[in-house]
Length: 452
Image (cartoon, rainbow, N blue to C red; front, side, top):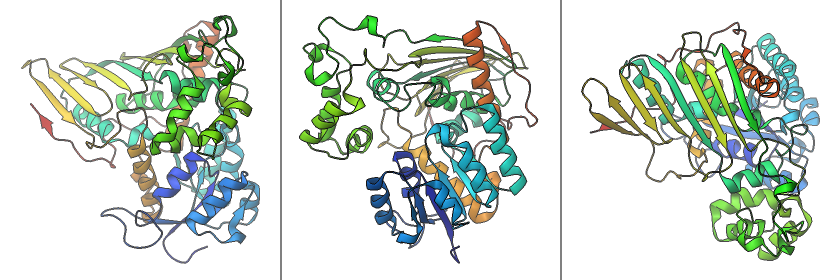
C-alpha cells in the first residue's frame, strides 16, 4: 500500500465511479499539489473495470500502472489491500459481494446506492463492515448539500416549531426517465431493482434525515402506466430512426441524443452512456444497434413510471413522497409544515414563513453557477470530500450517515414495495440504531445567509 496520503481503488469505472474518482486528487485537474482549503486529497492507485475502453481511459487519466489495472473486481480483491479505501460503483445487483470482500480486506468503502438489492445482502454488508471496523459511506448524496444542512439547522433552531408533515416531490424528468428507466440499465426490476430503490432511495433516506426519526408505518401506490405497448402511437416503428411519428413524440431518441452533441455537459451524460463516439454518425449507429434507440412503447421495461409513498412516524408526523416521470428534469421540491412555520424549497432556494410575524425569509443555498436540473454534482463532490476526510482523520463521524442508518432507509423502501404490491399498510420494525437527530446538521455544509 502507498506510504503516505489517502489512497483509493475503484471497482467500476463508469460514470459514477469516475465522478467520485475525479474529485479525489489533492488539487483539481491532477494528482498531487495542495488540496483546496479544508479539503483532504487522495490518489487513485488501482482500478477494476470490465469495459476495456473505460478501463484504459481511466487508468491513463489517473496514472495507474498496468499491474494495478484489472478487468474484474475479483482480481482487484485477489491482489490484497492496495489502498486505504475503495469506491464500489459496480451494477446494482453486484454491490453486496464486492462490499463484503473488500471490507474483509480492511478497505473503507464508498458504495454507490442502493446499498444492495435485497435486505439479506444489505445485512451482510453491515455485518462485514462492523466486524472489520471499516467505514461505509453509501452514496445518499442528498444528505451532503448545503440546502439540506440549512433545512436541518432551521428545524433544530425551532424556526417552524415542531415538524408535522412533509410533502416531497422527485420530478425525474420525461426524457431522463425514458433514458434510464425505459431504455437504460434500470428499466427492469429483475436486473436492477424497483424504481423506488434504484432512483428514490435517495429521497426516503433524505426524509428520514430531515425528520430525525424512522417511519413506523408505510403505504404506497404506483404502476407502469404509460410506457406500455398499448400506448404506442399509430405508425410508430421499433426504432426512432425509422419512425414516421418521431418528430411529434416527446421521447424521441433521435432528438434527445443528437442534441447532446453541441453541449459538453450532455456529452458527458447522458450521451456517454449511449456511445463513446460523439459524432453524428456514431450516435446514429448507437441508436440503430443499441438499446437507446428503441421505441419507449416497445422496450422490455417493467419499472413504475409514477409512485406515491405515505409515511407515518412514531411521533405522529407524516410524509408524502411522489416520484413521477412526467415532469421537467429539475431539482426535488419540498414543503415542510410545522406548528409555527412553513418551509418551501426547490433544491437551491428555501422560503420560510413565520406564523407569528407573518414574515417570509429566503435562504439561497447554492452557487449561482449551479445547474437548475436534477443533477447533484455539488453533493457528489461533498460526499467524496467527506469520505476522504473520514479516512484521513480516522473520524467516521465526518460522514452524516453510517451503515446502520443506510440499512434503515433501505428497509423503508422494501416495506413500501411490499405495501404497494399487497395494497396494505406495512408496519416497520425499528432498527437497532435510531436515525441521527435533526439537531445535528451535516458537517459538510456551511450556513446560508437569509434575505428578507
